Image (cartoon, rainbow, N blue to C red):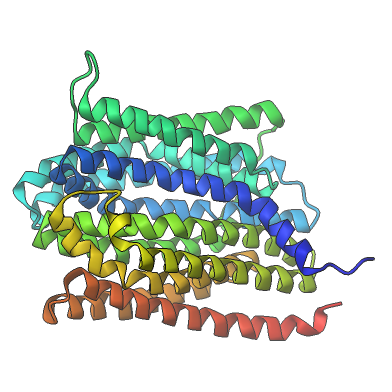
Length: 439
């Protein structure tokens, strides 16, 4: 058998990652479309959706994290030579139950908004946006579930081309519903929420139709599958939730000072998330390939996919950081012309590129952990990094040293370094233990 070289591993990872990159960029560009339209409508609209999405994302990500266990778990099953088509209906049932729980949780938070200390003019728009978003959860979770399911088969092209198409669909719907067109009145914040609802259901049902057209399924029930999903997915879900709550709590903390700070945090997060989608896609590819190698007990491939994927992610984020450091004003200017937003966002643009590099490293390490089903460390590392370092240290710098939003981002940089250190130490022990099993 020919020895597999570096080019082979890069090609194998990119075969899965490239379409996912397109899809992930499409997914975030849907959010970018919301930001662009909101910023063009008014700063108050921008601030309202920034606060609303900050709160909603803290709840939504718990279910998304659990659903993300589908592809690495089924990839392990494939590596063990098990049939995985029979897990189609169980996966959908699992995601729809999560959607029901999540939608109720979002609605339950809505009455608390007036008590959170936001500007009075923003309270009702935030509540409206959250209510409509709660209704869209079923479409969002159906799409996430089926995308993960297909990814386990390494079917990634159609789901991600669909996402790219929805970028344009979302912009058109946003423009029509926010500003009005013909008999359709200007709906502002409500228009943004309705556009997101329509797009999420379209994406979910489009993937459902694709699955029925290309595969045959039978009804199947396996309680062990649900248990395995929860066992693998719960640490991932809580880790993602811990991170998202930390990021979005910054928007909430700063939004209490002024809505423009929440808008600035949303703008900066949008920028860093755009570049993050590349290593995030590579991390998904790592999880699938490492999961297959783990199930097949091929520890040499497991190690090489881990190493190559991690280097690819970090190199990309280093390039991205250079771009953001070189053109901060021009990049911020794409999203807003508000001088107050410029004043707040530009200093942060000199801090978060350093965070990006370590963020690219940590998501790759998390992908390895998902593939080998060692997700507890991801939860532990995220909790310690974000809630023992990022939030308290960032809060201290922001309000006691008057660094405002920049202070929080300095805290996030420190957290990312700690997060990577914890996971590297854990993975080193794992690879040292199994090194003797390489052939």
